[in-house]
Length: 210
Image (cartoon, rainbow, N blue to C red; front, side, top):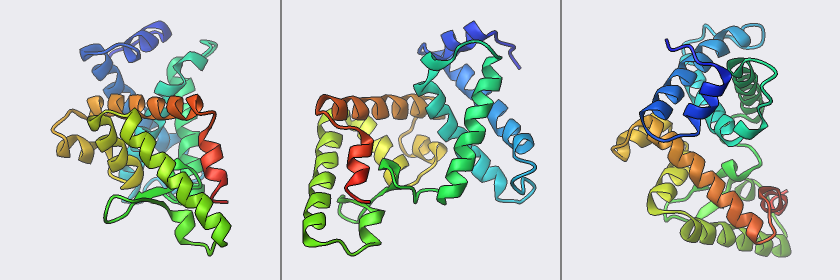
């Protein structure tokens, strides 16, 4: 396994091409292996389903790591910093009962492409709240259509709204998993920037459903 310095990790993860793909693949392996050790005292890592969950958690952690590379101070090894993020992501997802959190990730794709938050389906909102929620959903749908490329939209809907793994998305889109990581990373950034340009944050959307 390639031994990288902190600077090499940052460089390779921020570039395109083979170097980036190799770095993401290696990081995924490191995080998946590290989660088994890091969560030993809190999670039954010997359970058969943990391998699949660890793969999903590592994928989520990589997306968060790619989005926060600028926050890495270099005071520790890059892999140590990345591992802490992966553990936090995993514990958060376990507490939220994965895919049911109160965030943009808590939205699901209905039968006819109508993005309906799960929170809305689980409550009985007043007419006023229902109108606000419908407006928020329409807003997110518009941003998905206008801010993202067709490939980004396809990958994001499959990942966030339908709960497919990166490997499943890669297979369905005839892409390499590492390319899907990059596609999802760019799609999330574009969506956040589009919200920011309209003076909104993901929290603003979430609040409507609380």
